[in-house]
Length: 244
Length: 193
Picture 1 (cartoon, rainbow over the protein chains, first blue to last red):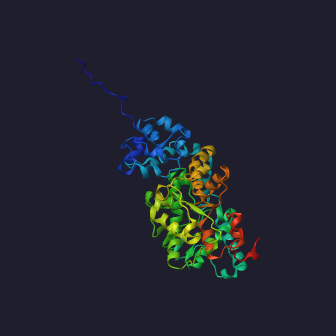
Picture 2 (cartoon, rainbow over the protein chains, first blue to last red):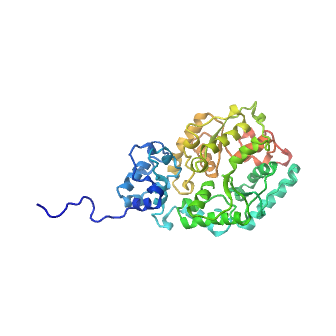
Picture 3 (cartoon, helix red, strand yellow):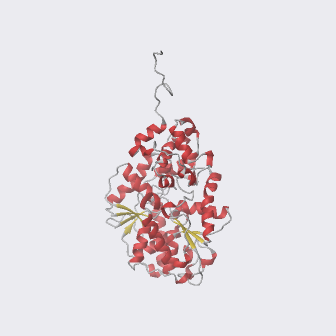
């Protein structure tokens, strides 16, 4: 009769990537509840890219294949659109598994395009991923506004305020408009003018985009959101109105 | 972006004294209240068909089907009931176009276009002349899909169509309209640059 108990599996329990993610999520993201039905993979446009799909990704995490997960580019091809969790009978939070998989690489090894857009947003309090300063934004807005007030006299009273205290709406705008196609701001202003909305941009935090979230950098995502939230708080705006 | 603000405020427990909303809800509210007197007569004879990409960030990830209904209410009022054709599947069950999550900036172009093939097929199946995009990432991606896969359907913002239907869309505010709509219902045509 043998005196030692036979233990299955690895010697000593290693904490896996999936264990760590489970600790971060409410109900552990249900990550242990997979029935392997494949509803996620069959309705995912990223299935097949990088020889991966959401079901396979979850199984690999469950099996502790952390090195393979770190090496995979697939977390950057998944858009975290949440269709997988929407159709999942067990409501497994695969998108959060992907978000956290993005953090497994050092920041400087994450995709350059996303990283640089995030870094650019941190450069100014405008949070613009295209690096637009407060001064440049103010100049473009006022320049375009004056041009239209003159060319279309029905809109001579139209406004595009920046930092208006007590306005009902704190409006954001994707940087693409003020930077590359400023005329596209005008239809939005006209709509707000027509309904008599009391609105304002914030000199800080007017930019709607947030690449730091995509970069999976929590400190920077927080900083971008906080910059805009603080400005809306300061201006005592009631509605943070997203244009996208 | 709606989701990054909503999720960020919650995740980092940021103090705030405001509500986070998306403008699509307000477009619908303002039309219902009569504050935005849109009219689809411009499209009565043209019969130009439109479909819409439900933005994942705003619909499935933030406000669900009610805001998808608001979006459709606005579109129908603006282009005419009979000129709107939904993709299948849609609303909260919609497929992502592949522009989100940073994919546009991640550097995997070939994979991104492959990802978007489903979306391009969906749009083509509607037979629509135009696709309305609810966010800039969707706009950029679907625009690229339209060129890459040869559908060549223009991709437009909602604000453009609302102003067209209000008769207040000037000649320089038509960047994303196709040739069929460049000259329709033009406000102050003399200001063309």
